[in-house]
Length: 436
Image (cartoon, rainbow, N blue to C red; front, side, top):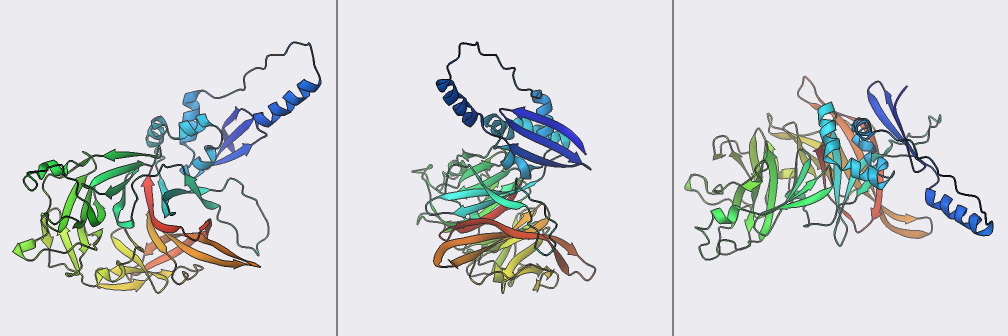
């Protein structure tokens, strides 16, 4: 075992170890200086002394550049624990220099974020490793996974919805009205920034009297292809066409000047009032209210009506779906299913030994966690001994996927565990994985 560094600061010690290129971080929080200093002050009040105080030597510490190099090698799962060391450590963990070092060392990784609706407001959590793991030789009991959802100190911003949240790189985008505004959550610094919409100026020909008129959305759904976000939805304005399909460039942070028409081949307009959208085969598939599923081909700039998959929307009406490696996954009959595009049919995900059946009526959310399927679901706690408990558990499972020769997809449950307990009024909104 090789020790990369030992940091001592204000009676707090962080030991960083390395074993076969896998870094783990152990945090030991000793007695705080405040409690020690308060006891010393009480003793000094009782026992007066005339001796001069000896000047204490400063605690040893590592140079900033070496400390940065050490922390950059620590897995992101341990950052919530490291943030408990001190304010300076929290600043270091959110600094741009740290993530430049991580990128230079090739230590970028997926970081899981979970959004919860808490009435009022919204809260964000991130998956991390528990700092207090207890080793045991008891093989009869199920070993804890070591994972937990830790709260992220993100200030409340525009209320997100399942269909309005997408992730591109290290940023989570929230598309919201009025005027197709965009809020961006930087998952490195955990700060929001707002991008003012520029699309209304390019549409002044449609609103000559008020080019900057804010326009509310009745509904919208966003999906990502490359570095662009495609948004389908419906306006809440009688002076505009009801449905819209727009594109936001995440590189330039502006909307494409001309919206994409929703009337292909001079036919009737698509109705995107309750739309859901996904990206499969490099096409944006949008669930409509009357036409089933329609597909937009960005490369050719046209709607593909020949490739309609009328049964694709059967399990997209809820919010329990995600796309991974060009495959759509969803939940049906309290089990995970996937859509076979070649056979145009839904199939159950085979394998999943040990994974419990999801509770009836509970919310389930799926996500792409660095190439693995992550599933979060709720379990109500109705009573406990002699009293009712108005709380519920959040469970999480990480599943490795494998496509076999017979074209079937098999899943292997790597771990599942209870990761958070929340009030019963809280609801799962969405789970996303950013690359940091």
